[in-house]
Amino acid sequence: MIPVPLYDPLDPDVVSSPYAAYDVLRENSPFWHVGMRCWIVMKYDLCIQVLKNSRIYVSDWRLAGIGHDTSSEEALGIQVLDGAAHTRLRSSFTRAMNSTVEMKTIQTSVRALMRSRLQEIPQGTPFDFVTTVGRPVSLEAICNVLGIEVPESDSFAAMAEALIRGMDAGLIPEREEPAKRAKQELNALIAQWSEYRFLPYSNGILQKTLNSAAEYGIPEQQILSTARQFFLAGYSTTVAAAANAIFAIATDRELSESLQQNPALIPATIEELLRLDGPVQGTSRALSADATLGDVPMRRGEIVLCLFGAANRDPEVFPDANHIDITRVGNRHLGFGWGPHACTGALFARDVLKVIVEEVLATGLPRIVGRVSRSPRATLRYPDSLFMSIERS
Ligand code: HEM
Image (tube, rainbow, N blue to C red; front, side, top):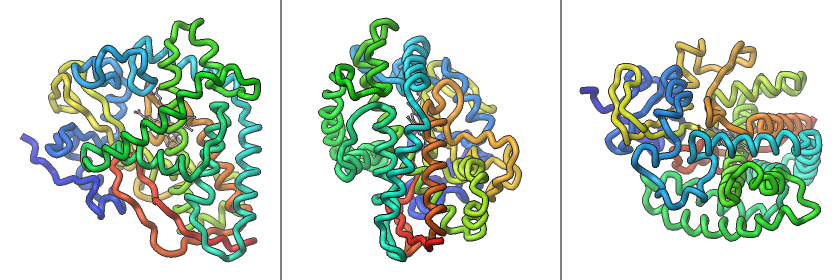
């Protein structure tokens, strides 16, 4: 019997930084977490085994005899389907993304918005990067991709935050009700989306996927659910990744100066920061059949939580894993996941992050002002606010 190690993702020390806890627990994983009622996997190679094998470790929990009920098949989206239905949806969205999304145009609009936001800030005045820059810029970018009108940033941010917090409702039950209300608000917004294909100005992946749904035999509701997942997954992760990256750069003078002098280093730095402190700390799958992971036997219907944050610092894969190395070769981190459900927006996200970091550093050197606050969240890791000032060049 494996002893149950103490691991509380909502403990203030773990919320502040989970990486010391990961280092202590990684070798003992997979272990069963009694409180979270799941297997926790922290080793890189075992996470890959889980993520690659979507026949045994399923996202569609119905295949494990648990989860969403069968009558709602038509309303399920890309993140909770497997097999042929998942492949069909995924291909439809990636095809639409490749043929519709003009990355240059999106980069230009993100850059223009970044510039105007940063120019509005009086020199030397501290500002919150998350509300002033991260959220509005990420929202505009994802709306451009989908081809939908940009909702008002602050109220959308509040709704998205309630939904993200709701992901931890199993650990913090009082988050369930606000998340339910936010879901209703979001559903009301999405109800308007099915009309988008008729609007001449809407030229994004939503219109494209809706128009080709019948041709590929995809129920319209699945397209809308997937678009909702694109919208939320794309928005919240980009805000979080941008805040984490800017925090790391602003707290490392040597790094910020070298990136400012040589912006060509920015893409490799972003990869390394996604490895070291990525926003998506983990993902779960359910077992559709009994299996053995490592040497641990697991049963059908049990849940496996792969902690990307821990796997990304596995010393067997990443030498000097706890330190930043922007010259790291073969940085195959799990910041965007792995296997059939890996992030469909990774290329787009990388481009948006690159523009955000470039524009901050083109304005000057960022410096953090005051303490960084973090709400307890088990799945998505980022500061709620990031007060900083920019020393103009
Ligand atoms: C830096 C920003 C981002 C990060 C760190 C990130 C991370 C991830 C990760 C780790 C997964 C895999 C989850 C799993 O295996 O359960 C994922 C899936 C996904 N991401 Fe991202 N993501 C980012 C941005 C985006 C953007 C901008 C979009 C949309 C344009 C997007 C759309 C999706 C979708 C639709 C999935 C589900 C794919 C599937 O289930 O087949 N993501 N993302």
